Image 1 (cartoon, rainbow, N blue to C red):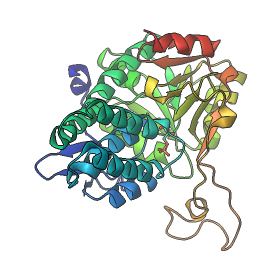
Image 2: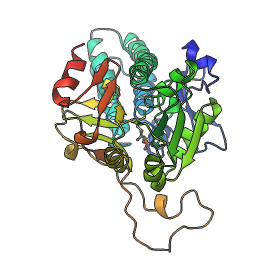
Image 3: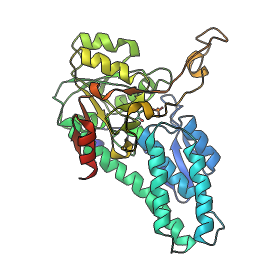
Image 4: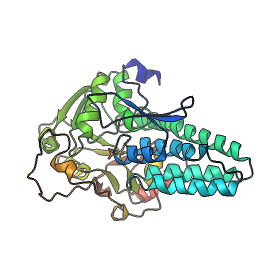
Length: 358
Ligand SMILES: CSC[C@@H](O)[C@@H](O)C(=O)COP(=O)(O)O
Protein backbone atom coordinates (compact mmCIF):
# COMPACT_ATOMS: atom_id res chain seq x y z
CA UNK A 1 0.00 0.00 0.00
CA UNK A 2 2.82 2.43 0.88
CA UNK A 3 4.46 1.75 -2.46
CA UNK A 4 1.36 3.04 -4.18
CA UNK A 5 1.38 6.21 -2.10
CA UNK A 6 5.10 6.74 -2.71
CA UNK A 7 4.65 7.00 -6.45
CA UNK A 8 2.18 9.80 -5.91
CA UNK A 9 -0.69 7.96 -7.55
CA UNK A 10 -4.14 9.41 -7.19
CA UNK A 11 -5.27 7.57 -4.11
CA UNK A 12 -8.89 7.97 -4.85
CA UNK A 13 -11.69 5.73 -3.71
CA UNK A 14 -14.14 5.52 -6.56
CA UNK A 15 -16.74 3.73 -4.39
CA UNK A 16 -17.16 3.89 -0.63
CA UNK A 17 -19.80 3.92 2.06
CA UNK A 18 -20.29 7.10 4.09
CA UNK A 19 -21.87 5.87 7.28
CA UNK A 20 -22.68 9.31 8.65
CA UNK A 21 -24.49 10.32 5.52
CA UNK A 22 -25.88 6.84 5.07
CA UNK A 23 -24.93 7.05 1.44
CA UNK A 24 -22.76 5.43 -1.17
CA UNK A 25 -20.15 7.88 -2.41
CA UNK A 26 -19.31 7.34 -6.05
CA UNK A 27 -16.78 9.15 -8.20
CA UNK A 28 -18.71 10.12 -11.33
CA UNK A 29 -16.40 8.64 -13.96
CA UNK A 30 -18.42 10.11 -16.82
CA UNK A 31 -17.12 13.57 -15.87
CA UNK A 32 -13.42 12.70 -15.88
CA UNK A 33 -10.91 14.02 -16.71
CA UNK A 34 -12.49 17.47 -16.59
CA UNK A 35 -14.23 17.29 -13.27
CA UNK A 36 -13.73 15.21 -10.13
CA UNK A 37 -17.22 15.05 -8.67
CA UNK A 38 -18.52 12.61 -6.07
CA UNK A 39 -22.16 11.57 -6.01
CA UNK A 40 -24.05 10.74 -2.82
CA UNK A 41 -26.29 7.85 -3.61
CA UNK A 42 -29.08 6.74 -1.32
CA UNK A 43 -31.79 5.46 -3.63
CA UNK A 44 -31.59 2.18 -5.51
CA UNK A 45 -32.84 3.90 -8.67
CA UNK A 46 -29.85 6.24 -8.53
CA UNK A 47 -27.44 3.38 -8.03
CA UNK A 48 -28.99 1.49 -10.95
CA UNK A 49 -28.59 4.58 -13.11
CA UNK A 50 -24.99 5.14 -11.93
CA UNK A 51 -24.03 1.59 -12.93
CA UNK A 52 -25.99 1.66 -16.17
CA UNK A 53 -24.55 5.03 -17.23
CA UNK A 54 -20.99 4.04 -16.29
CA UNK A 55 -20.68 6.64 -13.53
CA UNK A 56 -19.30 3.69 -11.62
CA UNK A 57 -17.70 1.18 -13.97
CA UNK A 58 -15.04 -1.46 -14.28
CA UNK A 59 -15.96 -4.98 -13.18
CA UNK A 60 -14.58 -4.93 -9.60
CA UNK A 61 -15.92 -1.42 -8.84
CA UNK A 62 -19.35 -2.46 -10.11
CA UNK A 63 -19.20 -5.46 -7.75
CA UNK A 64 -18.22 -3.25 -4.80
CA UNK A 65 -21.05 -0.81 -5.57
CA UNK A 66 -23.53 -3.68 -5.82
CA UNK A 67 -22.40 -5.06 -2.45
CA UNK A 68 -23.00 -1.73 -0.74
CA UNK A 69 -26.21 -1.31 -2.72
CA UNK A 70 -27.57 -4.61 -1.43
CA UNK A 71 -27.01 -3.34 2.10
CA UNK A 72 -28.42 0.15 1.50
CA UNK A 73 -31.43 -1.38 -0.23
CA UNK A 74 -32.58 -3.19 2.92
CA UNK A 75 -31.05 -1.00 5.60
CA UNK A 76 -34.27 0.91 6.33
CA UNK A 77 -36.55 -2.07 5.89
CA UNK A 78 -39.39 -2.33 8.41
CA UNK A 79 -39.30 -6.14 8.17
CA UNK A 80 -39.36 -7.90 11.51
CA UNK A 81 -38.63 -11.43 10.32
CA UNK A 82 -35.88 -12.98 8.24
CA UNK A 83 -38.43 -14.16 5.67
CA UNK A 84 -39.78 -10.65 5.08
CA UNK A 85 -36.33 -9.14 4.94
CA UNK A 86 -35.24 -11.80 2.45
CA UNK A 87 -38.20 -10.98 0.18
CA UNK A 88 -37.11 -7.33 0.14
CA UNK A 89 -33.50 -8.30 -0.45
CA UNK A 90 -34.49 -10.40 -3.49
CA UNK A 91 -36.19 -7.38 -5.07
CA UNK A 92 -33.06 -5.25 -4.54
CA UNK A 93 -30.87 -8.08 -5.89
CA UNK A 94 -32.91 -8.52 -9.06
CA UNK A 95 -33.19 -4.80 -9.65
CA UNK A 96 -29.46 -4.06 -9.29
CA UNK A 97 -28.68 -7.21 -11.26
CA UNK A 98 -30.54 -5.77 -14.24
CA UNK A 99 -28.29 -2.69 -14.50
CA UNK A 100 -25.57 -4.24 -16.72
CA UNK A 101 -25.21 -7.79 -18.03
CA UNK A 102 -21.58 -8.57 -18.84
CA UNK A 103 -19.36 -7.98 -15.80
CA UNK A 104 -19.85 -11.06 -13.66
CA UNK A 105 -18.65 -9.18 -10.56
CA UNK A 106 -22.09 -7.58 -10.30
CA UNK A 107 -23.74 -10.99 -9.87
CA UNK A 108 -20.83 -12.39 -7.88
CA UNK A 109 -21.20 -9.60 -5.30
CA UNK A 110 -24.99 -9.91 -5.10
CA UNK A 111 -24.69 -13.70 -4.67
CA UNK A 112 -22.13 -13.20 -1.95
CA UNK A 113 -24.40 -10.75 -0.13
CA UNK A 114 -27.28 -13.19 -0.43
CA UNK A 115 -25.20 -16.04 0.94
CA UNK A 116 -24.25 -13.89 3.95
CA UNK A 117 -27.86 -12.94 4.51
CA UNK A 118 -28.87 -16.60 4.55
CA UNK A 119 -26.04 -17.49 6.93
CA UNK A 120 -27.48 -15.00 9.39
CA UNK A 121 -31.04 -16.35 9.08
CA UNK A 122 -31.43 -17.11 12.77
CA UNK A 123 -30.23 -13.67 13.89
CA UNK A 124 -32.33 -10.58 14.53
CA UNK A 125 -33.19 -8.36 11.57
CA UNK A 126 -30.94 -5.61 12.94
CA UNK A 127 -27.93 -7.89 13.22
CA UNK A 128 -28.57 -9.25 9.71
CA UNK A 129 -28.40 -5.68 8.43
CA UNK A 130 -25.09 -5.15 10.28
CA UNK A 131 -23.74 -8.37 8.82
CA UNK A 132 -24.59 -7.19 5.31
CA UNK A 133 -22.82 -3.90 5.91
CA UNK A 134 -19.68 -5.69 7.05
CA UNK A 135 -19.84 -8.11 4.10
CA UNK A 136 -19.98 -5.19 1.67
CA UNK A 137 -17.03 -3.57 3.40
CA UNK A 138 -15.16 -6.89 3.21
CA UNK A 139 -15.73 -7.08 -0.54
CA UNK A 140 -14.13 -3.65 -0.95
CA UNK A 141 -11.19 -4.33 1.37
CA UNK A 142 -10.45 -7.72 -0.16
CA UNK A 143 -10.39 -6.15 -3.61
CA UNK A 144 -7.42 -3.98 -2.59
CA UNK A 145 -5.42 -7.04 -1.57
CA UNK A 146 -6.51 -8.96 -4.64
CA UNK A 147 -5.37 -6.16 -6.94
CA UNK A 148 -2.03 -5.85 -5.18
CA UNK A 149 -1.45 -9.59 -5.53
CA UNK A 150 -2.38 -9.50 -9.24
CA UNK A 151 0.01 -6.57 -9.62
CA UNK A 152 2.90 -8.47 -8.06
CA UNK A 153 2.32 -11.60 -10.17
CA UNK A 154 2.03 -9.49 -13.31
CA UNK A 155 5.16 -7.54 -12.45
CA UNK A 156 7.13 -10.79 -12.30
CA UNK A 157 6.46 -11.17 -16.05
CA UNK A 158 7.67 -7.70 -17.03
CA UNK A 159 11.10 -6.12 -17.50
CA UNK A 160 12.18 -2.59 -16.64
CA UNK A 161 11.84 -0.10 -19.47
CA UNK A 162 9.22 -2.13 -21.35
CA UNK A 163 6.50 -0.55 -23.43
CA UNK A 164 3.08 -1.75 -22.26
CA UNK A 165 -0.13 -1.39 -24.23
CA UNK A 166 -3.45 -1.35 -22.40
CA UNK A 167 -7.06 -1.02 -23.51
CA UNK A 168 -9.99 0.59 -21.69
CA UNK A 169 -9.44 1.31 -18.00
CA UNK A 170 -8.53 -1.45 -15.59
CA UNK A 171 -6.96 0.94 -13.13
CA UNK A 172 -7.41 2.13 -9.61
CA UNK A 173 -10.79 3.79 -10.26
CA UNK A 174 -12.16 0.54 -11.73
CA UNK A 175 -11.37 -1.27 -8.47
CA UNK A 176 -10.91 -0.60 -4.76
CA UNK A 177 -7.29 0.37 -5.42
CA UNK A 178 -4.35 -0.28 -7.81
CA UNK A 179 -6.51 -1.70 -10.60
CA UNK A 180 -5.89 -5.06 -12.20
CA UNK A 181 -4.03 -4.43 -15.46
CA UNK A 182 -2.57 -1.18 -14.12
CA UNK A 183 -1.53 -2.61 -10.74
CA UNK A 184 1.88 -3.85 -12.03
CA UNK A 185 2.47 -0.44 -13.57
CA UNK A 186 2.01 1.28 -10.21
CA UNK A 187 3.97 -1.34 -8.28
CA UNK A 188 6.71 -1.34 -10.92
CA UNK A 189 6.97 2.41 -10.86
CA UNK A 190 7.80 2.29 -7.17
CA UNK A 191 10.61 -0.15 -8.02
CA UNK A 192 11.99 2.08 -10.78
CA UNK A 193 10.75 -0.04 -13.71
CA UNK A 194 10.17 3.04 -15.82
CA UNK A 195 7.48 1.55 -18.02
CA UNK A 196 6.26 3.39 -21.11
CA UNK A 197 2.51 2.87 -21.19
CA UNK A 198 0.45 3.24 -24.35
CA UNK A 199 -3.25 3.74 -23.65
CA UNK A 200 -5.74 2.94 -26.41
CA UNK A 201 -8.35 5.69 -26.37
CA UNK A 202 -11.04 2.96 -26.40
CA UNK A 203 -13.93 4.16 -28.48
CA UNK A 204 -16.78 4.79 -28.13
CA UNK A 205 -16.79 5.82 -24.47
CA UNK A 206 -13.11 6.70 -24.34
CA UNK A 207 -12.25 5.05 -21.03
CA UNK A 208 -8.61 4.86 -22.19
CA UNK A 209 -8.37 8.55 -23.02
CA UNK A 210 -10.52 9.92 -20.22
CA UNK A 211 -9.64 7.54 -17.41
CA UNK A 212 -6.45 5.53 -18.01
CA UNK A 213 -4.48 8.45 -19.42
CA UNK A 214 -5.80 10.59 -16.56
CA UNK A 215 -5.00 8.29 -13.66
CA UNK A 216 -1.56 7.28 -14.98
CA UNK A 217 -0.62 10.89 -15.68
CA UNK A 218 -1.75 11.91 -12.19
CA UNK A 219 0.51 9.17 -10.83
CA UNK A 220 3.49 10.40 -12.79
CA UNK A 221 3.62 7.34 -15.07
CA UNK A 222 4.98 7.82 -18.59
CA UNK A 223 1.74 7.42 -20.58
CA UNK A 224 1.06 8.05 -24.26
CA UNK A 225 -2.45 8.16 -25.62
CA UNK A 226 -3.13 6.55 -29.00
CA UNK A 227 -6.26 6.05 -31.09
CA UNK A 228 -7.48 2.46 -31.17
CA UNK A 229 -6.41 2.06 -34.78
CA UNK A 230 -2.79 2.91 -33.91
CA UNK A 231 -2.15 -0.21 -31.87
CA UNK A 232 -0.72 -2.05 -34.86
CA UNK A 233 1.81 0.63 -35.73
CA UNK A 234 3.15 0.97 -32.19
CA UNK A 235 3.55 -2.82 -32.08
CA UNK A 236 5.27 -2.89 -35.46
CA UNK A 237 7.61 -0.08 -34.43
CA UNK A 238 8.79 -2.21 -31.51
CA UNK A 239 7.38 0.09 -28.86
CA UNK A 240 5.33 -2.62 -27.13
CA UNK A 241 6.79 -5.59 -25.23
CA UNK A 242 3.59 -6.70 -23.49
CA UNK A 243 -0.16 -6.09 -23.56
CA UNK A 244 -2.02 -5.99 -20.24
CA UNK A 245 -5.80 -5.80 -20.09
CA UNK A 246 -8.51 -6.32 -17.51
CA UNK A 247 -11.68 -8.31 -18.10
CA UNK A 248 -15.36 -8.46 -17.27
CA UNK A 249 -15.94 -12.20 -17.38
CA UNK A 250 -13.60 -15.10 -18.05
CA UNK A 251 -15.18 -18.39 -19.12
CA UNK A 252 -13.92 -21.74 -17.86
CA UNK A 253 -12.02 -22.36 -21.11
CA UNK A 254 -10.13 -19.05 -20.75
CA UNK A 255 -12.13 -17.00 -23.27
CA UNK A 256 -12.23 -13.49 -21.81
CA UNK A 257 -14.81 -10.74 -22.33
CA UNK A 258 -13.44 -7.23 -22.03
CA UNK A 259 -14.15 -3.81 -23.49
CA UNK A 260 -14.88 -3.78 -27.21
CA UNK A 261 -11.66 -3.79 -29.22
CA UNK A 262 -9.71 -6.02 -26.85
CA UNK A 263 -9.91 -9.07 -29.10
CA UNK A 264 -8.51 -7.06 -32.01
CA UNK A 265 -5.55 -6.03 -29.86
CA UNK A 266 -4.98 -9.70 -28.97
CA UNK A 267 -5.02 -10.71 -32.64
CA UNK A 268 -2.43 -8.04 -33.42
CA UNK A 269 -0.30 -9.01 -30.43
CA UNK A 270 -0.19 -12.60 -31.71
CA UNK A 271 0.84 -11.35 -35.16
CA UNK A 272 3.73 -9.36 -33.69
CA UNK A 273 4.58 -12.11 -31.16
CA UNK A 274 3.94 -9.87 -28.16
CA UNK A 275 2.67 -11.53 -24.95
CA UNK A 276 -0.97 -10.75 -24.23
CA UNK A 277 -1.93 -10.93 -20.56
CA UNK A 278 -5.41 -10.80 -19.05
CA UNK A 279 -5.54 -9.66 -15.42
CA UNK A 280 -8.49 -11.30 -13.69
CA UNK A 281 -9.50 -11.50 -10.05
CA UNK A 282 -11.19 -14.80 -9.23
CA UNK A 283 -14.40 -12.78 -8.82
CA UNK A 284 -14.29 -12.20 -12.60
CA UNK A 285 -13.76 -15.85 -13.50
CA UNK A 286 -17.04 -17.62 -14.16
CA UNK A 287 -16.45 -21.36 -14.09
CA UNK A 288 -20.18 -21.93 -14.68
CA UNK A 289 -19.78 -20.39 -18.12
CA UNK A 290 -18.09 -22.97 -20.34
CA UNK A 291 -16.99 -20.74 -23.25
CA UNK A 292 -16.99 -17.19 -24.53
CA UNK A 293 -19.98 -17.57 -26.84
CA UNK A 294 -22.17 -17.99 -23.73
CA UNK A 295 -21.21 -14.57 -22.37
CA UNK A 296 -23.96 -11.97 -22.65
CA UNK A 297 -22.54 -9.02 -24.57
CA UNK A 298 -24.11 -5.70 -23.63
CA UNK A 299 -25.45 -3.62 -26.52
CA UNK A 300 -25.55 0.09 -25.83
CA UNK A 301 -27.25 3.02 -27.51
CA UNK A 302 -26.28 4.10 -31.03
CA UNK A 303 -25.93 7.66 -29.77
CA UNK A 304 -22.72 6.67 -27.95
CA UNK A 305 -21.13 6.20 -31.39
CA UNK A 306 -22.81 8.97 -33.32
CA UNK A 307 -22.71 11.95 -31.00
CA UNK A 308 -21.75 11.38 -27.37
CA UNK A 309 -18.76 13.43 -26.17
CA UNK A 310 -18.87 15.67 -29.25
CA UNK A 311 -20.29 19.16 -29.51
CA UNK A 312 -21.77 18.33 -32.88
CA UNK A 313 -22.90 14.92 -34.13
CA UNK A 314 -20.07 12.89 -35.64
CA UNK A 315 -22.33 10.97 -38.00
CA UNK A 316 -25.25 11.80 -40.28
CA UNK A 317 -28.59 12.04 -38.53
CA UNK A 318 -30.49 8.77 -38.65
CA UNK A 319 -27.54 6.59 -39.69
CA UNK A 320 -27.68 3.07 -38.28
CA UNK A 321 -24.96 2.22 -35.76
CA UNK A 322 -24.02 -1.01 -34.01
CA UNK A 323 -22.58 -0.63 -30.51
CA UNK A 324 -21.57 -3.85 -28.75
CA UNK A 325 -19.85 -2.82 -25.57
CA UNK A 326 -17.57 -5.84 -25.09
CA UNK A 327 -15.96 -8.54 -27.16
CA UNK A 328 -14.56 -11.93 -26.30
CA UNK A 329 -10.88 -12.70 -26.77
CA UNK A 330 -10.35 -16.29 -27.76
CA UNK A 331 -8.34 -18.22 -25.15
CA UNK A 332 -5.84 -19.22 -27.85
CA UNK A 333 -4.75 -15.59 -28.11
CA UNK A 334 -4.10 -15.22 -24.37
CA UNK A 335 -0.55 -15.89 -23.16
CA UNK A 336 -1.61 -16.10 -19.50
CA UNK A 337 -4.40 -15.10 -17.13
CA UNK A 338 -3.04 -13.39 -14.03
CA UNK A 339 -5.10 -13.90 -10.86
CA UNK A 340 -4.51 -13.08 -7.20
CA UNK A 341 -3.67 -16.74 -6.63
CA UNK A 342 -1.06 -17.01 -9.35
CA UNK A 343 -0.55 -17.08 -13.10
CA UNK A 344 -2.73 -19.44 -15.12
CA UNK A 345 -1.35 -20.80 -18.41
CA UNK A 346 -3.17 -22.91 -21.01
CA UNK A 347 -4.98 -25.25 -20.88
CA UNK A 348 -7.10 -22.83 -18.90
CA UNK A 349 -9.86 -25.10 -17.69
CA UNK A 350 -7.29 -26.96 -15.64
CA UNK A 351 -5.13 -24.03 -14.54
CA UNK A 352 -8.09 -21.79 -13.62
CA UNK A 353 -9.72 -24.59 -11.58
CA UNK A 354 -6.46 -24.93 -9.65
CA UNK A 355 -6.59 -21.23 -8.73
CA UNK A 356 -9.92 -21.76 -6.96
CA UNK A 357 -8.45 -24.55 -4.83
CA UNK A 358 -5.44 -22.56 -3.57
C1 LIG B 1 -10.50 -3.85 -13.69
S1 LIG B 1 -11.72 -3.36 -14.75
C2 LIG B 1 -11.82 -4.60 -16.01
C3 LIG B 1 -12.89 -4.37 -17.00
O1 LIG B 1 -14.09 -4.16 -16.35
C4 LIG B 1 -12.56 -3.19 -17.92
O2 LIG B 1 -11.42 -3.52 -18.68
C5 LIG B 1 -13.73 -2.91 -18.82
O3 LIG B 1 -13.89 -3.49 -19.88
C6 LIG B 1 -14.72 -1.97 -18.28
O4 LIG B 1 -15.80 -1.71 -19.11
P1 LIG B 1 -16.81 -0.56 -18.68
O5 LIG B 1 -17.85 -0.59 -19.77
O6 LIG B 1 -16.03 0.72 -18.67
O7 LIG B 1 -17.36 -0.94 -17.34
